[in-house]
Length: 88
Image 1 (cartoon, rainbow, N blue to C red):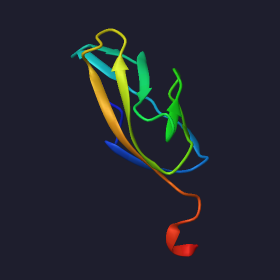
Image 2: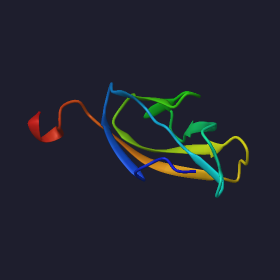
Image 3: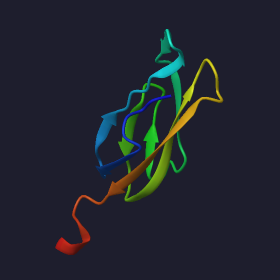
Image 4: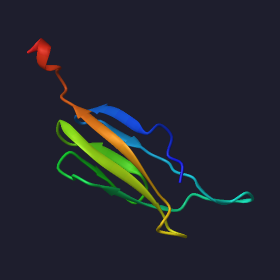
């Protein structure tokens, strides 16, 4: 399962769409994955890969292949406050 970068930073309130590609064989690629966020108080992600940053913190978002649930790739997500602490 390929997501892209293995880490991502977003700001509270941002919403973005993640996409994943599942390489099952040299000639077989799928895009059907299940998404999971480890800490849904930091961010949520729906079945289409739409991620919403809820509060500052860190969580792991995982794409899991529908065809083979052993194929998984995590993404480390950091959600930053809207105003950096040093500006307050």
